[in-house]
Amino acid sequence: MTTRTSGEAGPPPEATAPGTTTAPGAGIAEPPASWASGAVPRNASADRAAIRAFRPRRVIPSVITATAMTALGLLVALEVVSALLRRPLRLVPYDRILPWASSTPWSDQRVMAGAGLIGLLGLLLVLLAIVPGRPTLVPVRTGTRKLLVGVHRRGFARSLARAAEAVPGIDRARVRLVGRTVRVRADAGTRDVAGLADVVREAVNARIDAFSPVRGHSVRVRLRGGAAP
Image (cartoon, rainbow, N blue to C red):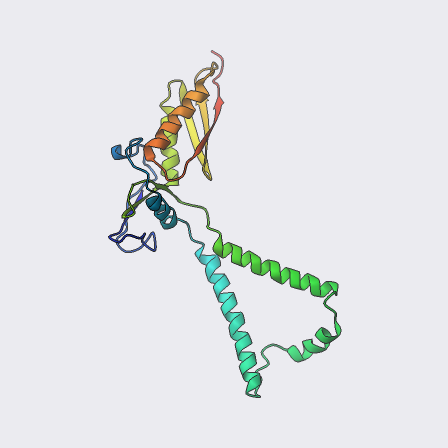
């Protein structure tokens, strides 16, 4: 579980900023008692702050994109300035490219293919830099922008599995988080599993409500009955 505190009205700029308090959360099995269902009031401003604070960043693609665009801009600037000073650097051999470019129409398949490839590559880099990566924390509701709390997805899933295993008749349960969908695979100790999936779903939903996550989660249960006696 990761918590962030701020004395200002707005959310902190980074989840790992100085003053952040981090505690191991992978093994969490029960939500704090203060997070009981209904105990945390809804606060739209605080919810948005928590989502922004724990939004995963794509640092490497952002750095690659920024570096590539900076290098390209610098190259163009050097060529233009050196040409204006009548001392062209000719870092790009455009003298050899000019005859081919001047004699090749835009409708040429090679030109269209090259332009399309460059455009797709640029779009891919921009999307990789903008689209958030896979989240590692589940923002939970605190009711205030001054305290932002995120539960590790692994610990969150493990806690939900414990809730499913606490249902009478369930021997073992495994939980996977796929986006905001909770996939529960449970093994029952009996072949008679009528209605047991609904009980497991209710138990998992109750545990989710106890954590009070900012965003809702849907629960899907896949139940496997035991061998015949």
